[in-house]
Image (cartoon, rainbow, N blue to C red):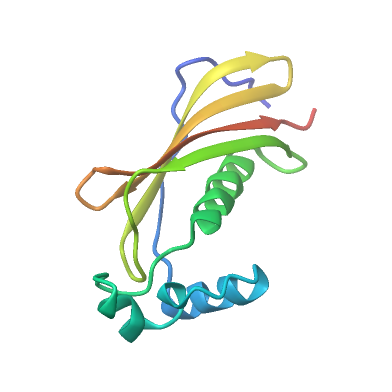
Length: 131
């Protein structure tokens, strides 16, 4: 396995969350706020559809970083900041750039972008790659 280098970009990952996925994530995370699973309620609050949970963004940052790091990789830390709202069906793109490499431990600056290229989420993920 070729070690990553600072400045290396990870392959982009495109995805969208469905209403069903948001409902299920609300259930397993005990998030009872109706904007995450009730489209009519979300509309009454001014959103175009059900809203992606903050913690689901964190999960996606971690999942895509671990996929990039390869089999046996271990998540060390994840931090993120939501800078815009995402809703069900919205096309999102995960991006990552290597910012530090210390042995098998790699730090990535990660972002989730909306279809127009604007940032939805920014953060940092640290993973340890398997030997």
